[in-house]
Length: 431
Image 1 (cartoon, rainbow, N blue to C red):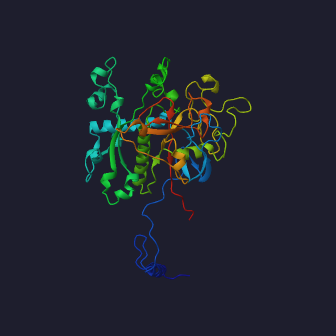
Image 2 (cartoon, rainbow, N blue to C red):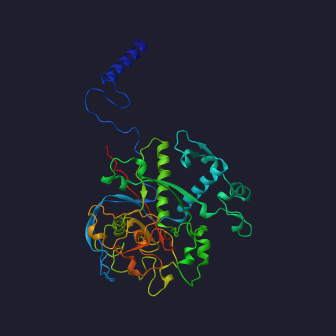
Image 3 (cartoon, helix red, strand yellow):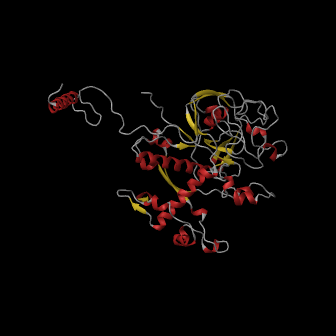
């Protein structure tokens, strides 16, 4: 029985104090006892599973032609390569997902014009010196009266309006990108140069080119797709098209920005960037762990045992409706491959980060291979070719093969090319 509880409490506090003092000078996680303990970053581990993505485990596969090279291009010679693990979007980016990007750019530009921002002290100037007040920005109503307040900096000029209706000018929706050229900074000849020499700032137009539905097909009636495909809610979960390679990259930059902003506000570790997959990563993911199979589902046929087509493409000589979709279909249509990825063959072809070179397989590394070239606007067209994979709703079955490779120019938009993102998350410790 304790007769003096206050004395007992005092003795307990003294004991705890002696224990704490035994770890000499422990301040902010640092133990000063003359020994090596290491110091962890002063942030918390952040993201777990990225929303809408699936994990592609590391492995080795035979990249290149799995069947006869019917065109005799010799541009996809079979070779063994190894790929580290990464996360990939289970579906192609949809209209709804890309619309979030468009609205973010629209709202930020409108907030700037309406004065809904705060100055950031110590910033270097320009757009980076202001912080949008998103609480107010998200309340902006784009009705006739508010649109007139935005002036000609964001809305259509009077002589460009139809029936005098004021509306947002899609050509004025531009996203400011600040990127660091890691590849240039890593070159030996550039060692010691100031960081500013590798920082590139650009303003990228981001609205999809809806006219591609008419431009891509001569003497063909596709007006409804032009008017409705990106605007109508029916197509919300269909893959977004009409984007150049540069616009797809702008989207990955923005997706990284909003994730980083969220993590920094909560003192959590910043993750790596979202990006377009390399050509090798795309093929490895499309194969779903199957070696030597021509299609994501295996093969060797494009139909299952019931005679149903397994992808959205151009059957026969043009029976577009036979596979269940005349143009595109939902991004999650058909069965996924063994990694859980949808439409890695057909529906829309997909941009990759890789530069297209016919002989790339002959000189690229066998460890996470990638051939990249950041073409400038004044470069010749030959240098602007980017690898496109997967085939689309308007392509014949040959292009559905996981090894089939073709290209498109980085500043071209098409009604049959979309994209999906990947991210390299750091491995999580079990302790």
